[in-house]
Length: 266
Length: 266
Image (cartoon, rainbow over all chains, first blue to last red; front, side, top):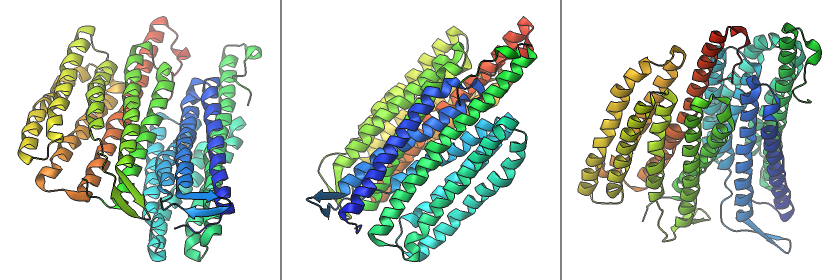
């Protein structure tokens, strides 16, 4: 059973509620604004909203499972015996991590062949990474955890290399106005993702007990909000910027540059 | 009563939750994007969304029935005595399987007469297949199960033959740009559907107990997600591709090829 005190329980509970509010708000924002970008980028913004919607669903399940695992009465916490289901996170990642990578690929608007091949390669590596992490997560044996952690790190590193090297070339072909933002999105992915394998290691290096549980749960929640909601808004901004550039270019060819409408305010 | 352990219970529970998230995300995706395809294909995309919406409803019911059939306290699983209602799957298939076949027919945009006749023939065979499978599914007697399985396989094989032979001719008349994707959709249907009669047989060939229940429930869930959500996205991609081809052909007849807008990026 998890060994936590009432204060830690409430802090974790509140972080899950923060996750629900942040994911819900991001979903509304992305779905309401998807028609303010040009048709070429609508799929990227729609998928960003799907990712936060899926995360919203899982945070509702997570907070319910958390509330069912303990009762706090007059400041005294008691475990109910029901298990806190941490696996919701893995189910979430299995769906959302490939979609996050596809968002980034779609907003770059590469050739159709490149979009398909990069989506399959990165999406496949992401699924492999999550599946290999799960057997370690559910184990309490440090050796088992290290083996699966290391296995999971292999596809993880392939993804990071692909984002660093493989996408670098494609970024240079992006319009100058959007290049900075796309670079930010790439870095946000790399940095926020690095948090997960570090959190995974904590119990293996002796960080256990209530404080560790609190750090892990709040840490995962913040990382999820950054990697999904903040990242989604960034993808939206890239889509707005690139729509503007393309509308301006199209208007220029029609000789009516002055009449360009900004498709949305970014 | 089902003989499973706590770990198997949780694995099955999590696979149902995965089904809810995947069907919900697919429904949002298909409904949000239905207006991005030309009017000719909107019905196909709408029906794809209906299929995942119906499945979403049933997975919510299934997970509730599953949660009500057992309690897990401190790692010990106890059957509550309430029956896990597996019939939700049959009710789901009765509605969704004919619709899945109709999706595929609609996206091919055959003549009106052919669309109607193929929809009735394939839809009718699908309903017959589900109805004949059900008496076997609820029986524990192997002989009874084999008789109904064999009866159900007759319409099943007719559908497979129709997809192989009957649709082959129609596929050759599709635009070259969409032919590969339609072929994928046809194969995805055949392969994912083959899973169901195999799962049905498992208890008859001695695969019983907790491991079998786990394999059956997780297997059905994965097959459902592939046959409905992945298939629906594939139908959407076909609709996008064919809309593009038709818009381009229309623009060419108007002599303004340069101004073709891509309706969405697939």
